Amino acid sequence: MSKVLRAHLLKHKVTHAPKMVPINNSTLGTLKTWLTGGTLEPQGKKKVDKPFQKFGREFHKRVLEPKKKRCKLSKPEEHMLRNMIASLCAHPVFKKLLLESKKEILKFGKIDGVPVRGTFDIDKPTVSTIADPKTTAAPNYMAFIGSAIKYGYPRQAWLYMRIGKAKYFYFFGIQKQPPWKVLIMDVSRFPQEMAYYEQEAKFLLYFYKTYGLPFGVTIETK
Image (cartoon, rainbow, N blue to C red; front, side, top):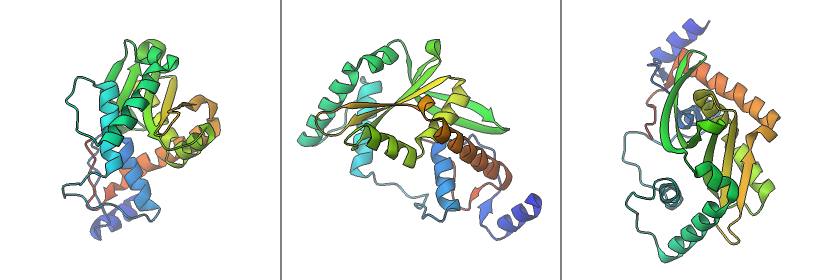
């Protein structure tokens, strides 16, 4: 049945043949959006960054790669960013994980015969832990958890833990408004959500391996 369906999808340019290039979490998200009827952003054109995307990248760069050249932000953005970073880097758990860890490291692996890859923001193999700082507008812990689950953070965690053979994964949500609280999501505390997103990830990987990606969609490289 899968061979017949694959031939039909290829013939009508619904998908293109699987090239088995290592796929990342972002592209799995694009595949999910397509399968659930969402609208995909056109590829092949130079993307114009949205303000929150530029801010988020600058946040990650200054936390994880502070020696890189800084981008110019508006005065309110600069004020916000400095307060967020000061709060995050003062947090004892984050400080401990950041110490002697690897930052922004690209890793590869295979899951169910499918090549996968991921860029780990913080990788500390000595304690079998991966961590990822996120900016958030959530006013409290439960709102952050709800947003994290809604946007599929557990799928990213499951994928990275498989690639990195890690036991633990933490998301550090840093508020974009006073009091700049650090909200920590330890994914081991959400077994039902992790189980759900594990099944989702396995299905998306199966679809990619069997039918490829939507026609015109390529593997994201960043």
